[in-house]
Image (cartoon, rainbow, N blue to C red; front, top):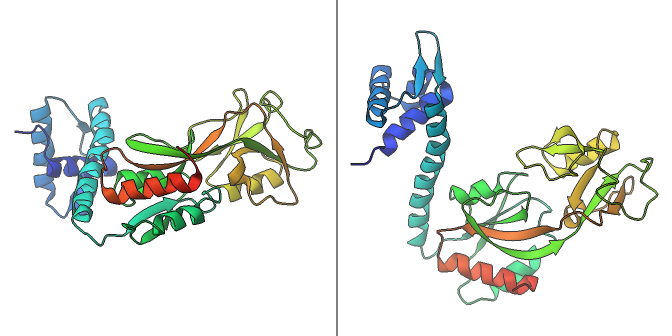
Length: 285
């Protein structure tokens, strides 16, 4: 018998997220005593205490924090498996591609045209994700493939194919001390304030000060105009260039890659065909 059942895991995650048995029971549409009993049974089976609880307080133990982290991923995997099974049996299923607006390095039209020319092509539904959630769309089954940027996006659980490699540019105000340069280096930017991209690993200049948190390029550009930060972006994400800002190549910054990503366990012809078309269109191998 499995140590964890999906329903028990759902119960625990609900309690761990709410940190309140009454609210969790209401969300799950079950009686609170039944929920409490299920959590106690789960703790007994695992042999660890998952929650510290009193009449007024519920808190996660270290074991509970670990189960919450991995439990969320497990529930997402179960949901994704069910969705992929349904779609694998649907011979008319559309292919769902998630992208960030403007995050295709001008390759998308060519990719779609190349795919449309294949004999097994399906209709492609374009989904628009945020700055950091597109990989999650693929992991939890909301999308089949995604256009992502390495090393910025989290590739955990995904396979990917590089479509294009590009340099990065620094975006500055016209009155910035470096604005008159034709190019800059990471050393030039070491003392600058760089934005913190919400949900993205830090990939700026090693000694740079971390500045205001932003969720997308539009917010970053506004902060640059206000003099609160500068930004270092892949060249394609800096398009279109705004006439009131200065764009300088960062000669020694690591290149970024635009990649097409899909779930590691996804071996469907639907996905393989689209990947092959994207590689052909991008001229990569």
